[in-house]
Image 1 (cartoon, rainbow over the protein chains, first blue to last red):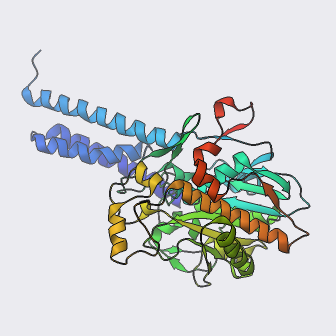
Image 2 (cartoon, rainbow over the protein chains, first blue to last red):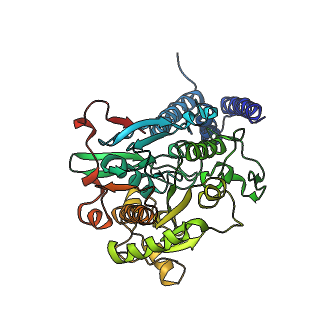
Image 3 (cartoon, chains in turn cyan, green):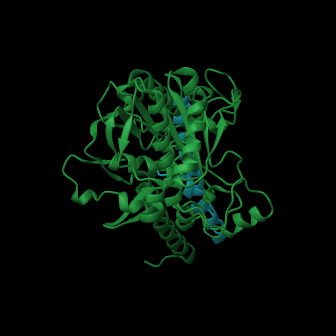
Length: 51
Length: 389
């Protein structure tokens, strides 16, 4: 069961990372651009199993 | 081609982000995969892994190494655990010094210097811990991973809402399902941390271990400190060892009995589920106190902190703290002298299962020379004598 939850969790991480990248591309506000990337960082670190 | 100002700004931000991501990712990767050399002494008989006792842990990050020193099976056997909580470095360092220096005259000494390897690969989220620390030696510096109290979530996830301990069914805090000192005696089909404890329980049973010593450190605001916590069946040994330590080693250490109502701890479950007598030892580590200041390598190694000292002036500490702090040499020395005295008392009262060891530095030796003096230089070691944790 834990393995299934973990796999789903990594899919969720990938989905939200894609959402942040999408929003980063769309926004024209520089503060929001920085905000999206700051939020993205821990998602990527976990997705790549670094932290 | 001319870039629009907004697009140019995005490119700059993305470049800065990637530099940031690569630097932080590299730091976390190096910290998780840092190899710590350990030079085994002449007493090494065998290096085994936990999977030799429980194959269910094979391939896991926690398939820890067991260093078996001495081979006199007619004598007694002691198992020493360091790094159940790797953020308490005195335990790992004490285990390290034993493996590198001990001479076993009778019996066997089994040492697991990193009992929870996974927990040694992460640091506490939000804790601002250093990723590693270095010990100065006559031949240079040796670097060790800092580690955390809990197994790395990369290796064991998700945590439950409530952790129900096996087999007692006592309800514990959710994150303690990754705490190696809350998952004894372990279970074969449990989480990685539970399987690690199960493998160590099998090791204790199969190797006919007489004594288990689990090395820890504690914050000064926690009442269980500067003490030996012992299962009731080992209370005579602990009490006598405490007296011997006071008279021969130059410091005082208390004795507390393992509470029956608190489950999952080594000093309770090993005693209840195996014939071995478990001891857990705590030295003071101001680095762990919630009121500490800057959480850096210096605090970890010197144990000096003005904010924790101030807490002491307000009567909030269970151990003294002055401007001398609690240096790592003092903390490791306390562990080593306590182990020596427990073994001595055991042998005096169990002549048919003796354990005789030599050449382990005492508390006074570490005060005088420091830990680094006793760490061996891996570059000068014979081939086959260097292992990596």
